[in-house]
Length: 186
Image 1 (cartoon, rainbow, N blue to C red):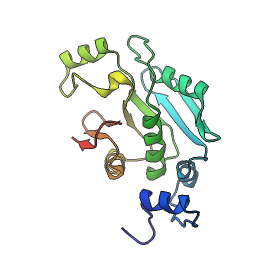
Image 2 (cartoon, helix red, strand yellow):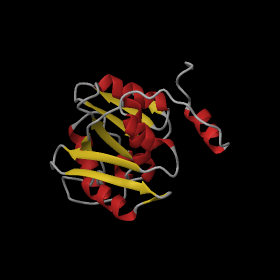
Image 3 (cartoon, rainbow, N blue to C red):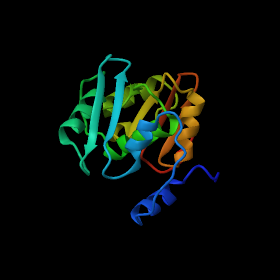
Image 4 (cartoon, one colour):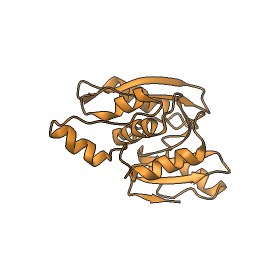
């Protein structure tokens, strides 16, 4: 580990012990500050590429998830083919918040696919390669994304570096898949 970058584990241990923590802050300082502590505000921005809906949401505040904000996220990340809404795993939102901080992005996540109903997932499986029969999209634990100000490779590498969940790299389709399952890459 380089001297100016602090691992998440060391950061949390220092913060819990009350020790001062010094970070080298790249661009996107506000995103890093959002990801820092349990009491900090956590927010995300999305633009869904199929519905053109936009959402800027503070989903964590005063030490707790904000129910109305979670509902708004569930709605914007719904199965756009069927309109079916399903709860999105808050851990996925935390993963995205941390990913935004790590990449230093200043733009919304562009959403290709959030929640997918079993019927939509089966339709996609029958027409494309690479769609899992037991996809975590069907339980609100996966999302396919890109960022306009971060290269796809940088986004993938940042997600892999977090070692939190699955990371799929789909260069030909111009997106990265992240989920809250076990750590794996493809």
